[in-house]
Image (cartoon, rainbow, N blue to C red; front, side, top):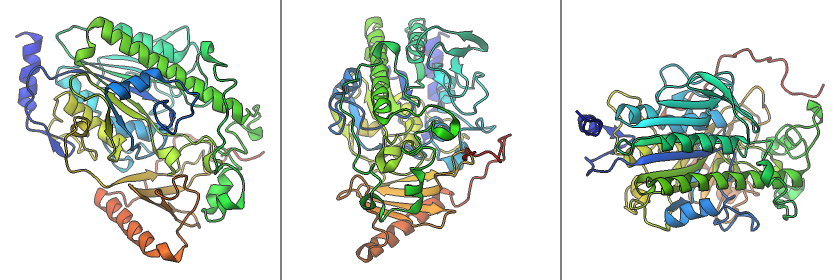
Length: 495
């Protein structure tokens, strides 16, 4: 039996299973496209030039093209705004309280299942390139991938060392360029009669915001954007929870700037970091363009789905923050664009609330590969119908959770519910206010309405809705990870 025939027979044997909450009908051949999923690290939702809220100097012509010729999912969010938990949610289709990846310190739990496994079983050739970042210490190949080229933990920006199928090799050059080259070379070696899946995972623009050397200084004269909520004023903090103001003085606050005086490192200026971040995003865009160019020259573009996403957002001064983790818009909202000639209509804009937990079921449906029976239930749903302009029942809120980390203690455990208009944030384990924001009248989340009598009924209703959602999902428990050798006496306090 030929490989294509075997691939089709295997798919037919799997049909009838479900992906998340949606059933996949038998596809008309040929409908098993190549899938390229590109993930960046700490890329804000509004740092793409075509987005109206973007800085006007920023250049992202290739991401702009993906949105122009494909779809922009304008309201895309993560379920946990932290590298490892978010990546686990992307790969499993599950919330943190189900997949168990609570922080950035530990590897994925035994028995966890990733959607590339299902693609691989169904006949796809699969490859991973870049930042895995579930566990700091291991770069070993993970299940579900035919080819593996990953680095340990955060990896390096310059001259990265990659574990290539079990053998460590050092490469010369800037990591985003190196990873893209590796992915392009691998795609060029694939058979035309067998679909492939590529997970291309960049380190950029993660702190310390290092662009490719050729682009350093590109935006040296660009105007710096200082958010209205960055200033340390009573107007900005009068109604906010206490921890919000206190965080600006510690690590991940603008008055500490990540590598402040307590760490013995030089303190970078805000303008410098703002510009380097933008240059790193520009470098990402260049490499997205390289992927597009390869697919077009190789003739594979017409049968390829590309999805670009950020693993979480990042505050650049908002609320005095310089990080993610919290439940503010700059932290939980991410860029998400999809491109698939002949499958997604040009200029599609999806306004429904989508999340990282939806990626796995969506890419499986795009590939016409059902989730196998007796595999862990996904919390997410496929937004593939939304990309095709179909009207389907959809959620009216997103659920968010973050658990306090011993090594970054400034952000408390919190749970949030966000609807199209409202956001309610519940802070657990701290003697502090909860938060209620009207995103329609206060999109920068400056005015916490939790103590305003006129909004008491609104707050109570959203709080009840939040806990109903947490209970229904099985999240009313604290995920307490066992210490894994951390020096618990040393939490980055002043010496």
